[in-house]
Length: 636
Image 1 (tube, one colour):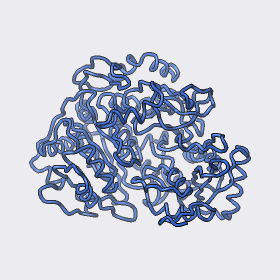
Image 2 (cartoon, one colour):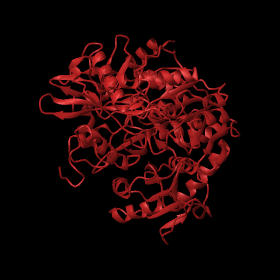
Image 3 (tube, rainbow, N blue to C red):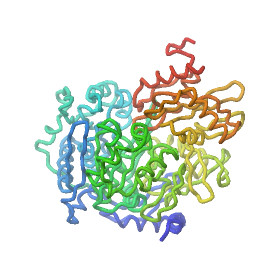
Image 4 (tube, one colour):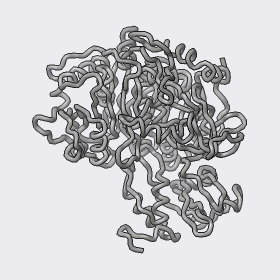
């Protein structure tokens, strides 16, 4: 059965389609119906059904005789540590840690915040919560005390599980002092903290509140799996970059398990027993879905990588992991490959490793420019597939389908809608636009299983943020278009569209042209204020290592290239070369912050920024071309 037939069936008869898919999951009790639409626009999948996500991720594979298969491979170049954990060992460690949580009073429905680096104990903590029906909320390791405090007050956890520190290539990041300050700031006080003491940065403990990981396990009784309702929450994940009260995306147990299990086979084309690697972090949705739950639900081996694409120790780090651990399919962000391309443009490090068993590379997390995709495909000589999804959906909205039918890859496109998603392009009035026309990317309700149920304790904000813009549709916040083949092009956030004298232009289209220049490693186009035209595009580019061309000459070439390919209507006149672009730790370029710097507007340094010092560097460079003329203290 090909893609078109499967896609049509999923939209025409979603209850039959997802009911059949749910057969791949072990259920303690069957559902009463597949889809409950009685509370629309709040939809629920598999009401009445009961299951346990941890049982489906670990125990059932052991029960099926596959307990000796590796479940988790931990590879940490920053500590020089490698460890392989079999499914049976993982089940036992999770059951024991679940006992430690239970002994501290954690039970079904209680929340546990997890503030951990990329170590196996992060996965153990998540699965232990799922095992006893507790709700986990993973906060990216190294988030500021203020941001952590906001999440503590919103989730109100009984227990916090944290690492004493995280480890970067050039420094140790103490987590425990930030946790202590967060608890001081928060109105809600967790009853206990369990701290994984790392030798690179041991923490000072608070008597009566804090327990070391090993101490918490002493006397703990291994816990069995608690059956929960399919509609019960599995986790809360706070969206990155939020200010004020954060938005806590709520994921259920039943729909989530069904969707992720289905996606592993049909989207990524992997089989149980194969090694799947998502080079991300458990603090992000990619880590939840495709480091932890997706691979383990499907019976794969997953990799926990504590390192970087470059610098740990070199641009061949990814190739070494793929070759050494036998990775079949990999998933990472385009920014990782831009970093590799910048440091090793001829892929000389790739030639040092045997990637015989490696089948495909998936990219997501931000828009992938065609130049990066084409470079990766040429160097790897394997399918390189851009696909698109969000924290809110939890799994892909659009992509290519190695387990159904491999469709032609169109550089610049995120592929076709995933079965179950009805992707529409609407104008500002809510009307569908013709193929090839830019508009708002919307999802017709109901969305498929696995997508957010609501926001934690805030149904009203859920509706206002996502559902009330055009009734019957979910607002993705992204703009783009569908071509005549129904391939989706995601061109940027709605507020990244540049309005030049009434002409709505795509920053993504201009970035494609800049990125195609052989000297450019990565780039961003932002809108800056203009008295005459309302706004004008401004390009920022990072050049590849070894480029000797004069920056002024390069900028003139880039301006001419954009004006030639888009036309004078773009009013593209200025490019500035920068050493690096400000990004979140997950790799998203902070275009909005750069726009506010250029326009002398107030801004908050995002909690998710990789390195705040970059913003000062950007301000300095923008001043050289006449922007960002207000100093940090507000003087012109």
